[in-house]
Image (cartoon, rainbow, N blue to C red; front, side, top):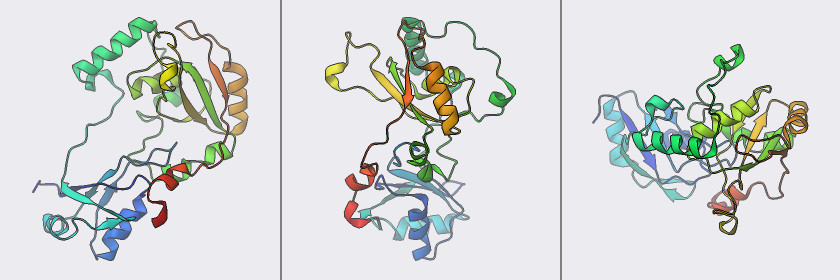
Length: 256
């Protein structure tokens, strides 16, 4: 057992939230110190696992011995000793050599922001490494559909394939430098028939701004602006699709 009693809880349904993990341990009268679960603010999904910290090793061992296979939203969980997750950071000095090379090749091929970054404004300097820290915020589940309903979510299209998420965030911070950027989705790939040499910029993402007024202003200002790789940006208000709870339906909908 590690000095710090932390356990990995895996095989979670994608729709599970922090409260579901809390309920599991409460039902067995087990006190936990902390639960680390990442929830994507754009889809409501978790990565199918979380980490749980305990106050002492005896409690952690008891959980290992007794809760293996217990159900969370109808799915049996898997519990192991802490499986270290890779620390995500947008700083290049924390990247593996392969990640760094992939990122450098992409920037060179796309001539993307070859000039030094401008000095951060006071507001930017105060921001955390990621715009929306999904490992340390508890409101991702409420962030899922709210920005679209409030008219402050934007579609950003005609993007190339950007290898790393931190790079995408840097580019969106630069593009929306005059606005209060709240969250950036992962890069979304186009259908297979629209990928390849003939479709170099078919990827897209979504971003959330502080309010609907900012979103409308950003769309008016940035839609059609030139990208560093020669294409024009598509920046539009995101359309709220019917059935926005697709994630819930596709994962154990009968157990909700």
